[in-house]
Length: 448
Ligand SMILES: Cc1ncc(COP(=O)(O)O)c(C=O)c1O
Image (tube, rainbow, N blue to C red):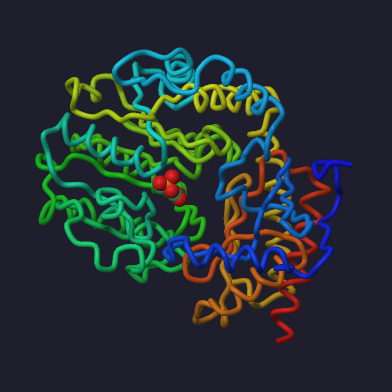
């Protein structure tokens, strides 16, 4: 039996087992200590929703390699497409010359992303590069300088995207010379409103603040290049804004002639039950940034813009490895699988089921302060006290560890949230296995 066929996690030795421990010692001696490492998982094999470690333990993966393996680990059609391309070319260079799958991929991305207008795309190798490209497209086109970004947003770790990123202080500490001219404004994180308002009585003051204060006093529209926002904040804890938020932002941008950039690096490719999260609110961004699930784990990022905005000159922006043929072949297969297996529908169906189950768990477990999500992008925020909403960070970390030891891979996010991002091929039976482990782990934490 392959690991793809198993029904439940298989723990043969409490992780980390002896081989994992030895490997981790080697790793810690030479690998950059900047990596956070949520759990001592030394993965050697993965298939479908399962990941096997070096000691033979098999885990149910509710993280998808941080929302990457949407079509499941090593989907046969993706593997086949990669192997096929390997027989032709691995790298030629798509900036000086032309390579075959790049144009096909761009055409397909243009077709599936929101908006029927003319678009162009720039391909890179990661989410951060997609964001850097978006910033440069907007600045080149407008000749403007200011950028509006949202507190809690995560957009990458290079010096431009890092300046936009405000999920935590660790990622920014000591790094000087980040991009200038970025103004951060509160996101519609209604569970912890920065303005201490209550939705809907607030009248969406977080948008009013941008209109009345930011654009008038700090960041005049005529000097502003773009606004960038995650339709659902990812690293901040899978925060779903109220329905009016994104339409109000796009209206504001339109009225003030500001380019609206949606960072869908984490929300894209059917994760939320639609191809792209913007579609939940009928939003057609001027620029959309993509990565993560785009090529099922091969490095790829894309910035797709209205054609009239992407008007920069030759030499203004390029790279060596973007548009790599093997990566593009994998991405084309991903698009086929998402469509043919109707994974947006499955994400929606299984996601709603899981969301309801987590909401039911709130009746039994005081530690759960908030449950939110769309499709298979579900955030669970743990609190010590539902009234004060004191973050239960220690308990959250204990829950991650307890679930891992039982064979369920989870990721944390924000201060005390858990983010669930299983592969979109997840079945109801597999969801139930994960839900049960989650609840058992929660009970263990509560008993402490
Ligand atoms: C919304 C968003 N944008 C950008 C990035 C950066 O992507 P990468 O880690 O590939 O550079 C991430 C990564 O988590 C992300 O979630």
